[in-house]
Image (cartoon, rainbow, N blue to C red):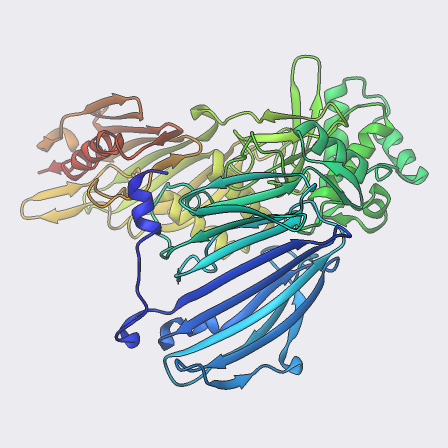
Length: 615
């Protein structure tokens, strides 16, 4: 982490003076973790929050995440004034515990204990403490010195107290004060942090998880359902294998269905595809968290009976169906998300939040996303491309990198034909070819959203001011395709503007990311997969041969970051414009950012000077 990032996150804020002019803050965030003589893990957390105004009063809504395998207890919770006088204490009747529901889920195994500590006079403080006891665990600590990314944390500490012979692995990042000591047959490790300011948000930056200081501590040997080790990725994968042993057994009735389904199909790839389509057509995805403790899969028989499951259960089910016809496949854990935090390959541990399936063939590996009923066969999109994944195969488990999306995989092409009559009434025939995230979003939209929502998405893709859709339809739409083609008919009343004697067309429609100026940019740039856009535009204007036309010069820029080009020509009494923009996947540090920004700025400058004039 460079000095500029440290400056952002370690900017000191002193909690004195006029509290009304300071946003709410976490004054104290103390975590003490003890491994007792019986091997139990006891986590005690103490938090002190100061609420200075109504704007950030939401911090008084306390939410504590835990799971059913943990013993949770609230030690105390109270509202106090700045002199330490107690204004109100929480009652157990005020606590509520619920499932932690997230987007697109109707069940999740994490729990949230929640209570409100609102007060109507500012400033006031909320102080609370809780204890979580665990008999079984595979992480001693995963700790960051912040409670909320949008509220500053003034003082934060972590203390870990373990028996002297208790072997652990430690990973630490960021600027933290560290101490280690011994006392009466025990070892004590402690970390302290000064003020960590609320996070900065900038486009195409690393996730906040990578920007704040982090301490991760794992046991060398542990028990969570079954015994395991975190000495290597191989041993961690072997533990996952043992954890899920016996879950891949299918009912006989399901085996008969599969045998009939693939009867007469000899090609292995086609067999896999047929079974995958069956999975997509007859099961439903629900989300059960993999981060905290939900690592054990429901058995394939459960999915066979109920026709739903989370990523673990659906992957186990798919694996089991393939096993029933003699095809080997491998349960594979991965950190999913378009901007997911990177896996620390040098620190074997639970860093994953999703499961996919890897199927090795003779000259290829098939990758299956088992939670989607709309994505094509063997498609790893923006959610799981180009990152480390752990292929689980007993002691042969290993980290691999999933295939990266190439520019051709994410090309979004728009072909416009605008017909303009003498009254400047414009009709548009538009052909869209969507790939990458645009393709993924629209495949979901077609299956799950209303017609009006799909129409709004079409308008966004067309990106013509004031466009009015007349009709649109998907062409050659089939489940195997990794792109989707759409034809749109539209009226475009605002295509041409009149300025004095001239008619003006602004032809360049590809959106360029709005990066901050170098003096304002504070974080590195991370582009996880390429951006590739191509627009071909034809303006059919009546009597163009009798009109004066002024067009800008074309441009062609190629750099290590990507390329941009435009071309303006007249042919067949039409104005033709080609615009192309590619931004390559990249990581750009702050010292290289001015050069990168110069590339972006040269494109922006050209687009501002790209008007076509007709008289």
